[in-house]
Length: 369
Image (cartoon, one colour):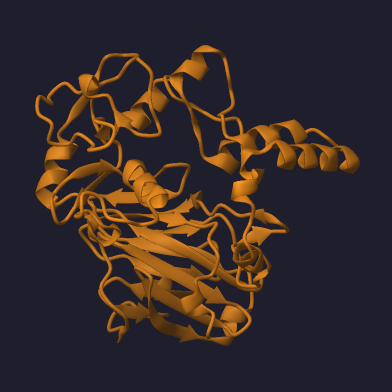
């Protein structure tokens, strides 16, 4: 039985599942990342429903499910979902559904792509059996071809061949004038040269009991104590205007502190914004800088749902935040925010987590500042 990373789990793999409660309305699999319609309670794989909205230009499904009605599972459903058990295909142990991917990786059933630090992809089982060490992503395959080429002319030749043969170069998918303008926009995605940066959390710079998964883009803390623990990103910004997002983890029970630090090394078993080198939005709708308590009121609460956008403008020394696409304004203006390196950071308490997302341009809502 093969592993399908694009959708969900084959229901036959689940030991204690004899209903259709969590069946995706599109692919009939049990979702790896489930989404629920707040109107009709229909269940979808995240990728399935995102694909639907993309292909339908955002139109509703069955005159009910709309982009704004698709949410994480309700607390009760999430609890039931977390109780589902699957057998590891290799060792046959019964594993919780939200731990099966990590287990099968440790068990040797799942293999990371040779370019995992760039693409973040996992190799499907059928390719593992063929002794493949690379995913099927076309850009990843191109990367492997040019990694060992030292001749710039040969690299240019390979790049040109790739662009010509890539299906995205078909006539009906050529860039529009608007797309070209966006590419030339100075408020673009985070890059080194022309290569996009994939922000990840730094395993060597995180507090105790913080677990990193999903190519080190996800972090989660679960412990008995109530002490803030921090984790810092693997890359520090030196100049310009940059943007990234923090996606909520629906298991979170305690508010996070989210922002930046100019200090890469400190006591990670504390909150980075307790110090003069840290600036943060506190999920209880406050901001914190060089203080542990009594922060200034700011924005709206953020904990276990939604997406927090962070825009650091090192030209003006400002740090701005948005929640689900709504600009919450400028939280900080400080000369110290003009001098790099400046690192994204979060602090977690008791039971909390999130995912860092990069490779996105600066939204229009921040370009007026």
